[in-house]
Length: 81
Image (cartoon, rainbow, N blue to C red; front, side, top):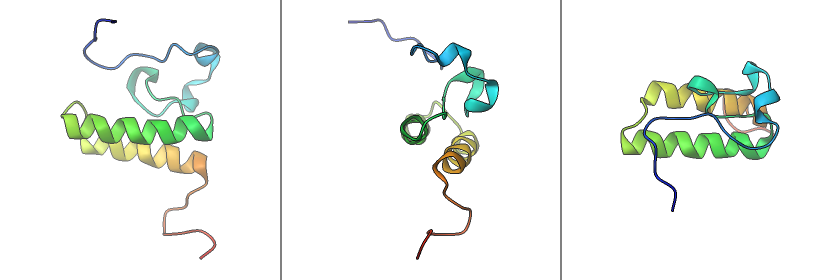
C-alpha cells in the first residue's frame, strides 16, 4: 500500500502536465477541471477536504465555482427549469 502524503500534490494522470494553468482550480495545479468528469471529481474532493479540515471553505468555494463554469452551471439556479 502506498504511503500517504500530507498536503495536496499535482495530478499524475497522463497529459495533465501539458494542461495550461487555467485548467486547474486548486493550489499547485491540484484539481484539474479540463473535462466534465474531472470537474465533478474536483468538487467532490474539495468537499471531502473541507470536512477533513485540510481545506478552507473559501478555497472549496473557488474550486466549486470553476468546476461549475466547466459544467455549464450558472450562478442563479437551475438551467432549463
